[in-house]
Image (tube, rainbow, N blue to C red; front, side, top):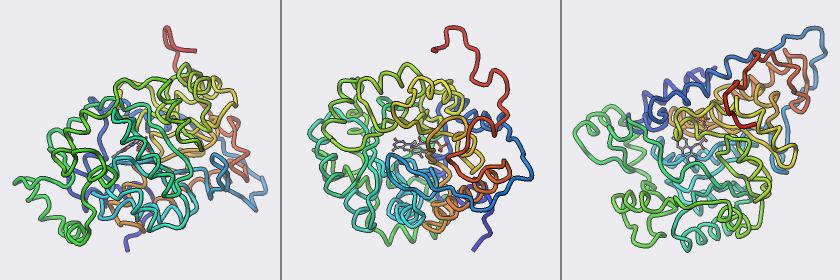
Length: 392
Ligand SMILES: Cc1cc2nc3c(=O)[nH]c(=O)nc-3n(C[C@H](O)[C@H](O)[C@H](O)COP(=O)(O)O)c2cc1C
């Protein structure tokens, strides 16, 4: 078992062990990848205040996210095609999250189906919904998630249309991979991945194939996805979906204070996630950590404010919490772990984040994540950006 001390270790192994097209799929941002890069580099601009001679015994990272007790305020972001990074990926990640005591959120575009994940876990997980034109299919998805015991719905708002990621087009990304010469050459170097894939029956989009009308295989699926993502999505539809769900609702993909206010006024969610989809949608948008303070002010305590995009360490989590987030989500960090080592890799990613969060908190002179506030940080002047016509 390799020694894992940081998320970078998992990323290196993921790159080595998963087929190139799937590693690239995870590691891409849209267009120039400016937003993807700045999601991380903006975290680096914030420094921590080292404090000494503070009793640091009896620390706690335990918290609550939308009313659920969690071992630390970090959830696993919904990630599509995870069952292609490692066979049975969503099941393994959900099991790792459950054992660790943090929420797992299953993507609409998962390989393992909602029912399959429910069958292999004991506690409720969360379900992420992409809004589709086919309302019957959307309603069926919500019913299936409810029947499987999912106890929170995450509605993604920032992907009515797909941001272009050059590498996915160049690699001809499909699930399962099409057997072209470059793909076969690549797979010949990833035989352990291939052996595991041969042993599982979970190789297609489990929530869709066999459930959506007319979708029976991967090729009809790509046509279906292009046609189905709902470009007409508006706040009225988001409100209808939230009402139809009738339980805990989290709105994901908010990056602007004006949208945050509208989300609260028009939908009244339990939480919003400040997110730019990990830099995969609107390249040129600001990083989540820069957007966070303005959104916290706009929401003014009317719902929880979570953050994702750019979390690669426990220190990033600490910074986000101290800047006003109630909790964080992480996508790539756990996907690297999964691609590297399956379930133990996801656990390793969570352990790395927890340890860094705990030790950094102690060295900042705090004993509880609930006590993290701006006074543990050194934030550069003008960090939020002084934009002409910037939304207030
Ligand atoms: C490979 C990949 C696939 C993703 N698929 C989905 C998805 O199916 N649904 C969704 O709401 N977000 C999806 N996201 C976005 C994540 O939920 C999350 O917002 C993002 O990964 C956070 O940024 P981070 O990777 O820097 O932590 C995906 C992200 C990645 C990297």
